[in-house]
Length: 238
Image (cartoon, rainbow, N blue to C red):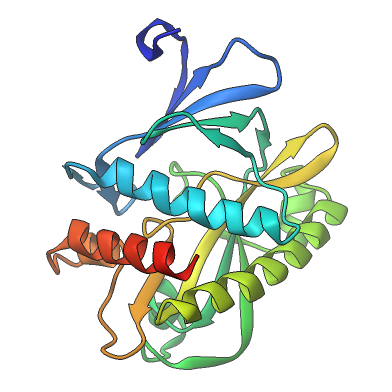
């Protein structure tokens, strides 16, 4: 069936989700859209979807090989994936290894400062409310997740961080921080959404050059060139 014939279920900032016709799977299509500031800044970057799809597929294959279950079933083409039909948990997990972005602004820690331990933050997944940070009791009070789910997300995030830090280190890249999303699938939590330069801060270990969406957020230029560099290094490392 052609994608145009499929029912569009959801359109996010940079991806579209379609009904696959199967109760356990969905079709996920990466688009060339770039956004920042909860959609306040927008652009179309030709080829960005293909780059993010390839990067995320490499990372998810690597995580799967190391015992982390993800929603990725297979890539259908350069920008389209078959994924498990999960119920997304409305709580994002932010993993921070180095101070950057909003963490630096909130706490007055200069960007680039190594943190003495890995920081995990929970945020409500809501553009309407600006993705506010939440603690466990707030999350469980309004029913976004159970305490058992939060504990499992913490444990999984730390395991993912260990694996990804090792992978990017082989690529000569510092993994400063990134976002994870989880989904419920047949009674278990699995990793969902994407892991790409759109959702990570990636810095060249030698030069400190930003290789992620901060190039778009901060008008640094060469967004696609930096994404291509990340993809090339991951391909060589794998």
